[in-house]
Amino acid sequence: MKNDQHTLEPTSAGQRRDASDDIGGTVETDSTHETESTGQVVRWGDGDAIPGTPFRQVVTGDVTDGCVVAIAADMPPGLHVDEHTHSDEDQITIVIRGRVGASVGDQLHVIEEGGVLFMPRGVPHALWNLGDEEAHLLDLYTPSGIEHVFAAAGAHGGTPVA
Figure 1 (cartoon, rainbow, N blue to C red):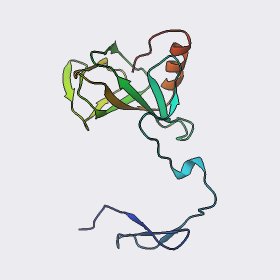
Figure 2 (figure 1 turned 30 degrees about the vertical axis):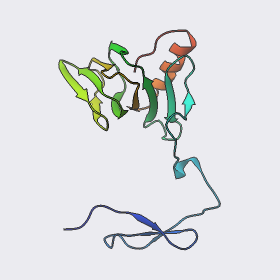
Figure 3 (figure 1 turned 180 degrees about the vertical axis):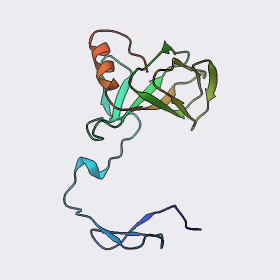
Figure 4 (figure 1 turned 120 degrees about the vertical axis):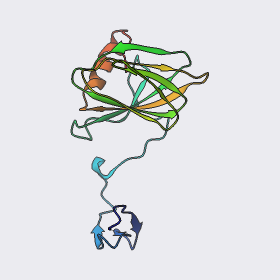
């Protein structure tokens, strides 16, 4: 049985060596030329704020060719995001910190720290902070585009929903 886990270890300048013998070989990289497609790290609290909303884009739809957008949110204690439906996007919520309740269709869920919840497009859902402290959520929407809806709502003083 082959090991499907692959890791890259640094080698000499500009090369990476796959640590798994299943793949082997080296991958040439140009360490002097960085592009947006080479990856990025965004710390919690960073990202591009969406004005008028509690959201920050941490990975934009532009860098994923519209495949996905990653949006971070700090959810205050007691906050309840009313039931709503996305017609075009699937939503995946990852609870980074805290404890969050959710309804998806007619099912109720409790998502603990580190838990992941999938909410398919076309299915009504709601989220709420069950804890006494701020919850940190990372929402992935696929395809991207909903960030424009959030920006429009924030610009007009509306309350965008996650």
